[in-house]
Length: 139
Image (tube, rainbow, N blue to C red; front, side):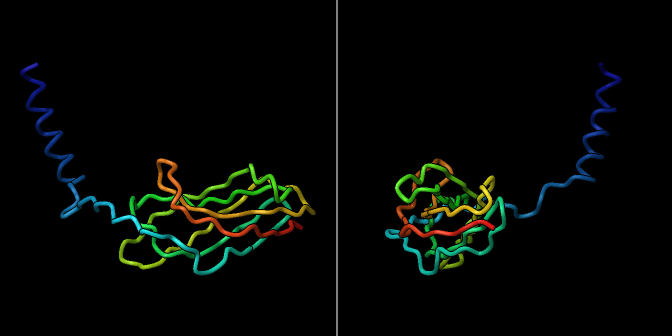
């Protein structure tokens, strides 16, 4: 074991030379949650094909955790939006607004879908913004 210790010390020293710690890297604390999140643009259909669609919208910055999700609740019946698609987003605390884009997959061709959007923290807590029900059709 005594012969192994100098070898390990050299290995750790070499690793520190090749893989240094980032200088000044810090975790950004969570921003204050917005008292009221509202959609300022959209939601709208950015693109749709036969089996997928992209829904986009803009809201004021919801604050809270930098890690967030855009969420689309959808279905083929406007009264049953039980399917969910979500996309991860990282909030920029320096911006007053956030643009969300969610890809909805595994859709049926030539079908009308109804949807509403929301956003949430990583723990699943909604930001409290719900859009009116909108619709789109796949090709």
